[in-house]
Image (cartoon, rainbow, N blue to C red; front, side):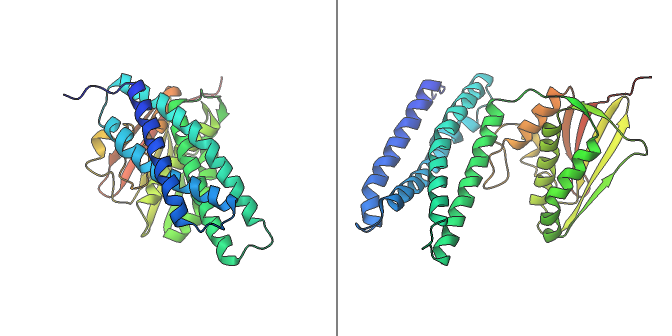
Length: 293
């Protein structure tokens, strides 16, 4: 039986992979670029090749095997490693992004080159968002609570996703109770949960549909119900919906739902997901904040 992974063995594998990738890039770079290429472009290509080669290797050799383990101690090690890797990747990504931005601002940049640089910058920003997801998972922030109206949060999310929803033909609906509701919660974290749930719904409805969010009060709790008309939660995902690194998206990290559930529980609430006859339904329940008599 294969021995369990330890933080030391994982870090050793990570360093070995980075070394192998760097050696491969070092030999391949002279073959890919002519000798007269500007050193700044050579550095940019070197960084991009190293990132493109290292990321799948890290996933295949390190993250993939760790996904299959539900052991709490191993998951703690994953969180520590994710933090270290995220910090190590963030610095070179920032350098590459600054180099790309400086090249885009040059006077002699052609239209085609400007478009290519824009694509590179967009991909770097996407990688930075993935890195931030790892950091949110590894180092959750304590809620900074205040009295807020959850309807305001939903309206802010809708205003943000409205252009994408319009392009996909997805209708957005907010159903509020007659009397305003109040919860004692972290505005930014509640916004993160609602945005993630709506984003997941949009990902599954590229051909049109509807997202409805209902705000309800029952038994002293405030419920925020997100319902869509998409295909629903995939059968293979449903039993592991809130487990780390579980996703049906090809480019997904599999930490969004874990972070959302953690935020709900940090507020003394819960997050549950289920399928309907058509679509999926997620219920975020938070303790109510009744007004003093």
